[in-house]
Length: 212
Image: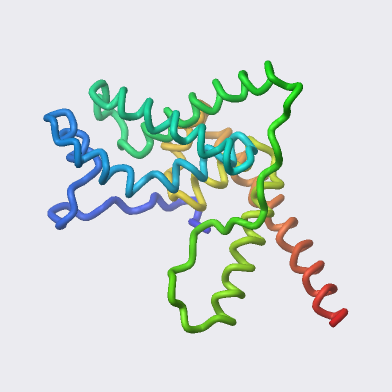
């Protein structure tokens, strides 16, 4: 997990890949391919954030993520560059999630299913030779995902944005619309709860392994 007093490093200037902001400028100038590049960079992160913010099943989260991407595309011409584009996109995702939650409450007679615990945080590469190692890594990823999914929603969002997506404390405050001190408090409490859940999962796994 990222230390509290460190800000995730920015991409080095002058590299071969254009920045998100440069891609946004290209899109505004009519380069449709620029949005495809933005999607390839950020769609998975936006899906994780949307899914865990809503606490939704995969299909519902996919639908919500499509709404997020459509809104991002529509809103990009109004992006003013006062924050990183990545931070701005998470802010749009947060607003879409709020709208979806209100819709779900109105349709509470058909509650959304629980989050599938079998999806890992990140897909493993295809063609791995070390099958035992791959399975172990996947089990670890699934254990972390399951533990994060069990956090309270406000803790889950903070932990996801900081420790999975690498946003700074200031960016998290902007995305979630909360004071910096609240970000620190939610991260502290969320990490404590996450550590406890991971410990319990590890103990349960050990007991299960001992039965064989």
